[in-house]
Structures are given as C-alpha cells and as structure tokens.
Amino acid sequence: MRITPRNDALSLKVLQGLALSLSFIDGQIMAPLSRLFLFWLLNAVATCASADDFTVGDITVSRGEQVSGFITVPEGIDEATRIPVTIAHGAAHGPTLALIAGIHGYEYPPITALQALRARLDPAILSGTVIMVHIANPPSFFGRTIYYSPADRKNLNRVFPGDPGGSVSQRIAHLLTTEVIDRADYLIDLHGGDGNEALRPYVYMPVTGDAILDAKIEGLAVAFGLDHIVMDTGPQHVAGPSLFVDQTALERGIPAITTETGQSGSNDPYWVGLAEQGVWNVLRHLDMIAEEEVANTGITWLSDYTVLNSPQSGIFRAVTKDGYVVTEGAVLGVLLDVFGNELTAIRAPFSGIVNYVISTPPVSEGEPVAMISKIANR
Ligand SMILES: [Zn+2]
Image (cartoon, rainbow, N blue to C red; front, side, top):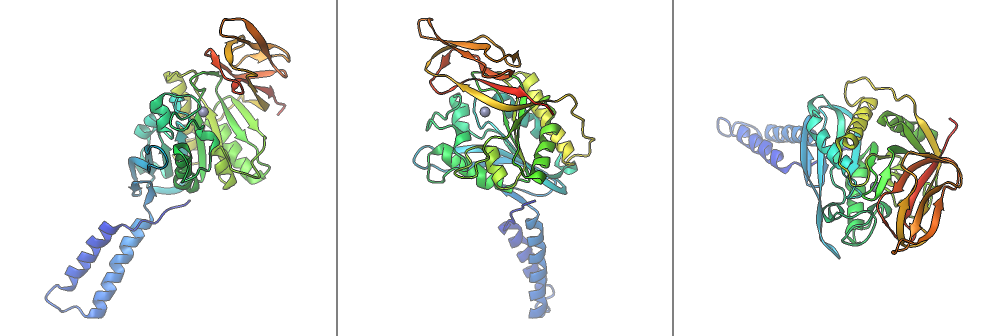
C-alpha cells in the first residue's frame, strides 16, 4: 500500500499552540528542555496522524472517512478541466483499489455504478482504500463524444502515461498516472460499449507471462463475475509508451483488468448493475469487505481477439449481433456508400464470438466495425 504522508499544517499548528500554552501553565515553571520534549512529542503525534491520511489531487482523507473532490488539470496549451474523484479510506488497513470510469465519455454505466458505489461503501467497515475516478474524461463526457475528446481529438486510452506539457487528454493521462495509478495496488478500468457499439459484456484479462502478476490479474478478472473473459495475450508494450490505462498499471507491476459493461449509449440499470456488482465482488475477493466471495461459474474463455476495422468511410449495416457465435467467413455487416449502394461485406476471419459490433450507421476508414474472439480450450 502506498500512502502519501501529508504535512497537515493546520493540526500541526493546533498542537504546537497546545504545546506553547501548556509550557506556560503556572507561569514559566516548565524548563526549556521539558518544553522542547513536549513540542517533540506533540509534533510526533501530529506527524503520525497525518502519515495515515490519503491524498489524491485536492482531496485528503483520514482513515475511516470518505471524501469527494477533484483532481485539477490546469490549463495548458488548451482548456483546463477537473476530474471528480472519491476516496474511501477504510478504517482498517488493506490494499488500495483504483476504479476508473469514464475514460471514454459516452460509456455511461460504469460512471453511474461508481456513484452508486460511493453511496454504498462504508469506510468504517472497509479494509484498505478505494479510489473512485467518477469521470476520467470530462471534456468527452460533457461534449458527448465517442472515442475522442472534443478538445484535442485524442483517444484518452491511447495517450498513457500522458504528458504534463501536452494537450488536455495527455495532461489528464499524466495526472491519472501519477495521482491514481501510481498509488494503486489493484486497478479496474471500467468501460462499456461506446455510444456506437452493441457489446456483449466481458472482461479483458491481460496475460503478461509473469506468473505471480498473472495469478492476481486472473483473480480480479474471475471475481468481477462476468461470464465472458477475453485473454489479452497481445503485446505488453515492452517498448514505447504504455498507451492504455491497464498497460500503465501492468508496467508498474500493478494487477489490472479492463471491464466492458453497457452498450450504445444506454445507461440502463441492467448495465449499471453489472459494473457495480462486479466491483463489489472484487472488494470481496480482495478481503476489503467482510463478505464471502461469490464463485464465478460457467466462464466462457476467449482468445485471439481481433478488431475488424472499416476499409473505408461509409455507412455500416450490421448483419450479426453482439454475443452471436459466427463461423469463419460469415458476413458480420455490410458497408454502404451514402446512397445505400453496397461497397463491401465485412466477414468473420475465424469462427468465434462477436464481442461487439457497430450499432449506428457512420463508420470512418480505419475505425472498428466489430470485434471477434475465438472460444478457447481451457
Ligand atoms: Zn471505452
């Protein structure tokens, strides 16, 4: 667990004042050495208390308390923003779990789930600390954009670990890395199908090759409780920037998963509930709350996930649906020109499960139309 000691100027001043007034009880009877000792003692007490506090951005929270506030992203080459954050700092010691919602601003269910979790968590009976990032990407959320920030046209989940001198997405990524990811012992990056994606819920489970780390990642992935787990054995970014939230955590040895609950801009309670219950299951798994972990049975393990990108801009008409099982060569959808003439068919490269498919008409060249995975033998 990583705790930032806080120099609590206010309580220090109060205790120093107390020391000063005590030293003058009955006039000047206290010897200078005793006075020095009293100062030392009370300052030590003050330092002890503050070392147990937890600070993120503008928020400092004492043990057994929950506080909400903001990580301020100062103005740079473009606009400033503020990231809403809640810290539940448990009365008992335990791990620090970072929960990040709203990296993509049109993926609403995790954002609503963290609001519910904020009301549901009781720091008095919590072991460890939960950092909830409610809306990681306010420009995208309030600008109602898929994939990209309206401020700088960057995808926040492709610019990690960020750059303090960059545009607003890069500055957000930098502060999330230093203020949140660096502080976590475990991390969940909560997504859903974006505003244009019909998505069958699943968890991305990174597989790094480090047995100890992988066991912890799998623990999170299974505990979250969804019945589709996509094993992500892709490049773990041995060189170059981490780009993704989960990769940024993994590079720091922090077990991380990415979850996908929700679709097509819906904030339906069903999707919200999946995200909220998933986090609750992980709190049980990490022994952060005193509840028995609920076994996840009947997982379909998926591998070789492949995102199919549109060969050109146009109008996409899905033929398949999210969660469908398709055979190799099956048509997943057709690409039309703006008059409705068929340009090409998008086919499944192998037999597998459709994780998501684009559910609204416009597509741009090089952007996703569907994601498909193989059903793994495991
Ligand atoms: Zn997303």
